Length: 287
Length: 169
Image 1 (cartoon, rainbow over the protein chains, first blue to last red):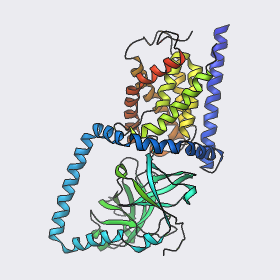
Image 2: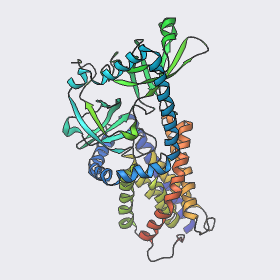
Image 3: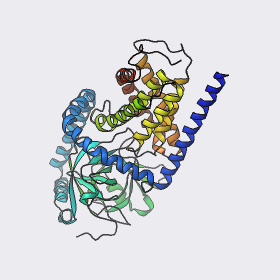
Image 4: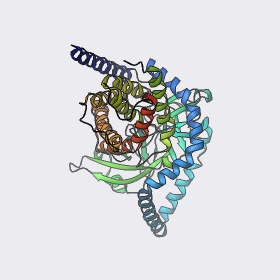
């Protein structure tokens, strides 16, 4: 009965593969990056990093062109949105001295001395995420430069993310736009604090606030365009004062007990090239 | 039975490296294709369910090493999808110009569906979102686009001495 034997073998192979996969998934979920699977992954990254850097140099311009073909509609839409926002900002600036002052303060944040005082490693983005379900970038600096898991990463616009993998020769950064990202933030003007979490659908951050903890005046003062920065509070993984985003909208729940603040991150991952990895851990003093 | 290891191992290695090094630069509609999945479907189509499933498992596992989803998730999805394609009755899929693209699209949708479903069961909630479905659908379309090249490469490596699109006996 050769047919029976072949079918049995096929089923046997399928069962072995399924059980092996489930075992690997379980081990990986339990051990995170610290187990043997994490060690194998670091070796794989180490081998591939030089190739990724070379591919970035050779195919980067081709990739931009490629993306430009496919994303032409998105770019036009984004351009329209940006033009609209620019017009709104100009109107605001003309009408309000306060808005001008806020703008000055916002720009001044980039030059705050503490960012320069925290020991940091300059790094270059050499690759984007290899898959479709994570928002990460790969840097060309890793453990050999003192980069370690958990370090915050900042760019020209503010917070970029945090290091989630590091090996000799490179590291992976989870971006602020990833659905699994979380950061303690404060609204710069209102001094309202809370934990902001990534959202799967939109790439926005969601800040849940309880209205019982806020005065009516504070609630009313939150408006679209308000600046949001890291607060560095409550064992936060990020030092205070790093620009994170701006308020997109405020949603008041029908119960009236809570309100949700949607935050648009400042990060533009598509144009990200150079970043700084801050060698800063939770509990470190801000210089 | 032919011993295909010397041909399949370098092929799997090449597919994973190409996926990880080259395709992040060549995103289309904001997504990358699942090269390993398409290659596993091509191998399963030519060599049958068992060889296809092992090949899918290997390429998926190699790709998993570079992802933040749990190791073994892509391996399982690729292997199951290749097993399904390799188990199809002979003659159900007719040889044709569009067959690679059709199998690439179908494989992308089925394999992607398995990936999302098992991912949600493993506790990755964002894989159950509407956005995840949209991303996987776009990725399947990209799979269909690259499938003719991948099927051609697989045919070249595995059966240089045989006619194209022939089922294994």
